Length: 463
Image 1 (cartoon, helix red, strand yellow):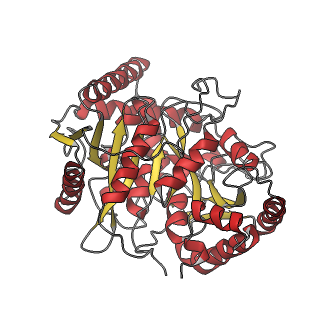
Image 2 (cartoon, helix red, strand yellow; image 1 turned 135 degrees about the vertical axis):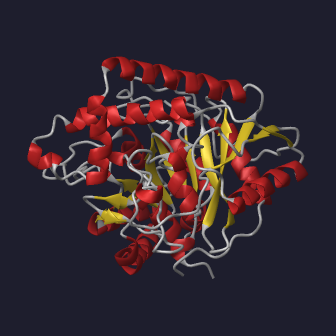
């Protein structure tokens, strides 16, 4: 019999509807799972147990009346530190933040989940300002991978990835500006979608930055997207609202779909052989299901990534320069030193970097004009040590492992990560599926198709 904490959101909703399980029971099971696992994983920075149980009781009453607010009413959810929720602080993963400041209102994604009746278990961890693809934080400490606690979760939605994999609830919200929902999804063996920019309203909006769902199944992400895409006037970069019916229109056969297989994007770390093998196996499975798969040549190069690195450094350095010295001292030294190096750059260099990002964007769109979707590794390497900030702790190039994810934030195209295999050490491997701009539903459909044809997965970790 499946443990309650291992049930998907869709399965919980069906059990609520059939009255074989209540939101209170599901919430208690999730809280018990957090209590059992989080001393090891450190995925939660704030657990709202009493509030969650109150919300679960309210949801239970709605289901008993036959008046749920949505299909996700009463389903437990965790939300990343930097996604503002009313009544809690937002430390952004760093000791530099004044945590005495309490949010007065929900951010748009948090508001949509509250309106849907979801039960907020608490807030998950992240690295300082979200500027590491790692689970290391000056405020939260080290977040660990449920498949092997000595290994990294990646980031920056580090706690969200670990929480879903460990069974802290089937739904989580993360944010993504360079891969931050897809990267932890890959190393934690779960599913995550980076939507097209503007598909999910956020506040404040910014170039390439999105909020995305992180779940164990594609169906659960589709259910979550049906709620998250609803409009909010605070996002002045949001797409015009037109319901996509993600959950209703999820099933699609891949027969005849044109897939590009990209195993070398032109920069970053080379792909480990066992990761290449897993991604190539995924491509063969798509071919066996009727898709047309063709290799894609590298289309980016090092200077474009260097420009992205400078843009990220300068963006954070501008924030850090506004901090008083005592708060600046609280920033993780690795992140602080990396960002402040941008102070030596000129405005001309910054303008050139921004122009390079638009060139990166152009090339990403150009390659998708030749295919319906791209298949790539989400990450080229297996998880490194939990305590490390990046591969080899390289301060000069800390983002060599996000070479496949970051470009598609700049291009605003939807992309997801889905588990496609495991290393010899039993660590998950992620397959990234990228679609044309605004084709979020198609990306989910291809992910769901792969979910049906992939090899069976081992049991979830920490059982």
